[in-house]
Amino acid sequence: MLWQASHNAIPTLCNLWRRDVVSSTICLGCKVGYEDAIHALWSCCSLFVVWKDDAMLMKLLQYEFRHFADLLGMVFTIKDCIDKNLLAMSFWLIWSSRNLARFDGYQVDFPRIRKAANSLLQYFLSA
Image (tube, rainbow, N blue to C red):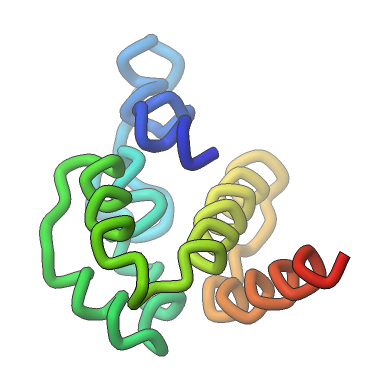
């Protein structure tokens, strides 16, 4: 999923709009921004609760990344300060939750994503 997001290959509303699949690119989470990969996975204001407990991620939020690949580049530059695996798991859960909300009417519980990502990562690492 990270490769797809960094190559703008996930079906965000902006990408679907370019293909005439949807009529609007406005983010369903915040109802303000355009849903491209960087917005959907990182900078949407509804995601603040996912990042707020990590000081380094809060510092990264101060940058305005134009593309998801730019964010990943910065993350790998400061790789010793960020748990890349936890961040990747968080991105995957965010994207999965957004899809469930869009297609199944599921209510996204963003405050629980970080804890769920940590649990899944610990389960994976223990296997």
